[in-house]
Image 1: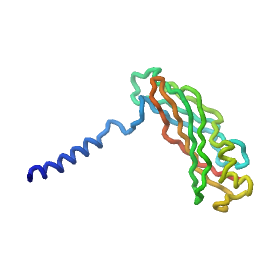
Image 2: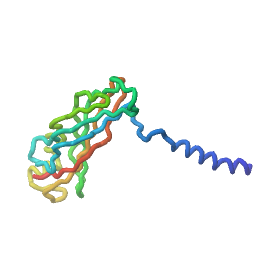
Image 3: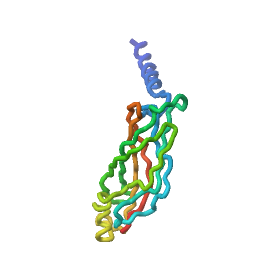
Image 4: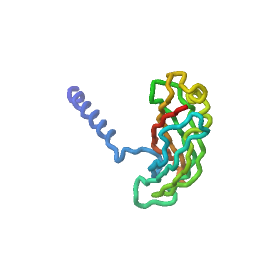
Length: 178
């Protein structure tokens, strides 16, 4: 009995060590990664009176997890992107999430550029809290003339081989002004 009690902690320690050892930390499906590799033309501020807010140029990169022996089956067909918003002040109200279709191919070991990619449309700019700035010049929740936001984008697609792919989130900050 005493020997069984002494063996149990060793067994648990061995199981913990084996479970924590991983060949790599990335665990997404498929043999490639989709990454936002470059932003250009990011605005520092956006007017709530605008009809749309865009990124000048955004570059997506298709990175093979194992760089040798790649094939066209690892090309990614883009399907959509999602934009979420986080307040950087004390306010709690957020613009609605933006989900847009996106079409294109990002070849394995390649990149694709997207010009004038929308990150805010009328649904975001025309609803609270941003619509408060448009109408009253201030956020009715905080009384501020500026709403600082973190913009976070994720891109979704599928490899030609059929693996669903999602990029890691990519973020930037803006101020929304009247």
